[in-house]
Length: 434
Image (cartoon, rainbow, N blue to C red; front, side, top):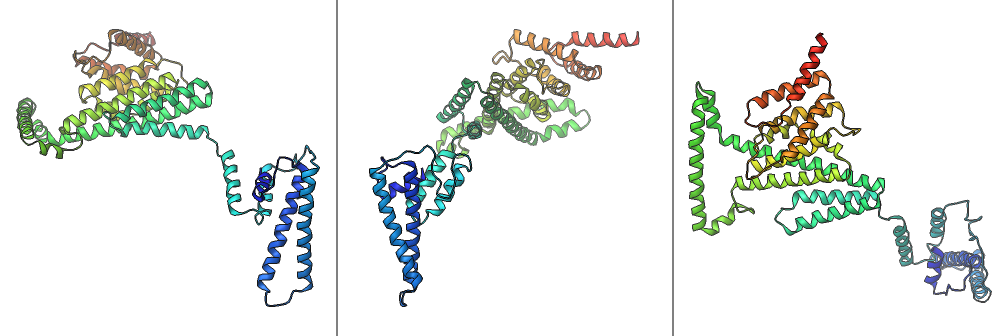
């Protein structure tokens, strides 16, 4: 490649050049160029003095070398030869003694004076085009980047669907090749997206609930007083009525002065509406990522992360109905796969998931306007819970079932009903005594 580039730079035709004469010719051209530069430097530095004998000899060697170049050019044009092994002008053959990169670097350094800077940069460009090919790691970085953009792009934007479609096309293309490394790219990127999205959802819900708590400090103060728990609901009801009246007044003011509405932010609504929309967006993305993890066989990674999210499980109990419903849906999907034989789903992971997320199933609001789970899905998840609990040690079963009884007894929901597991645990305790 370097030889062809150098010959093309000197303006010679390469269609008749053979391998052996071509290498000899290039080696001679490089020698002639070196002697030319040496003579030129001597003439420049010693222009005021007479040439010495060595200077005359150097000049004669240069002329003879360039004459040899001309003779070789004539031989190459009229007597083409073929050679199976390229000749190494530095000595030896190129077949087994040295790599192409080392020989090419030595030839490039020796011919730096013969080749102009443009030819050298072109050679480097060709080399980098061959070496710097797209890799699997680059594909994984690209997929991770697109999944991260989903958290930043507003759901109402037209680019949101574009980014989601791009991510799906990359993952589907990797899956079609049915290669373990390409499937691992999907799993690693989705696992990272699951961790990032769940962390963002927790942070957003925590900030929202902190604002609600700061606004409700009078109610908490009244509850701390004697008999305050009886008075607090009435105070909270009066506060809700007052906030509703104030929201009507603000809406009427905004309708009367439309320009003032533009100063409320990019969303154009109240802080509560913005909080609900953003929370639902992140929960929808987390649900989409969870389904993709199931498709590409990496749901065990989501199970491990879900078992280490006590903060999110606690905040989900008081979340808005739509956000809470999506979190319940995600938990139901993960509970459905909890009994599968995954290597990474250990006893500790199963125990943590049951302890953290069973209260959400008991306290979640399942309204008629936004149903969370169907009857069949509830039955399947309940059956899986009973199977998983029966596979755990007796001490773990005691903790899980004790917490379940406490939550199940004080809620109006009749699901999940883990009484078969509770009766089985009691029976096993009786057998130990017998």
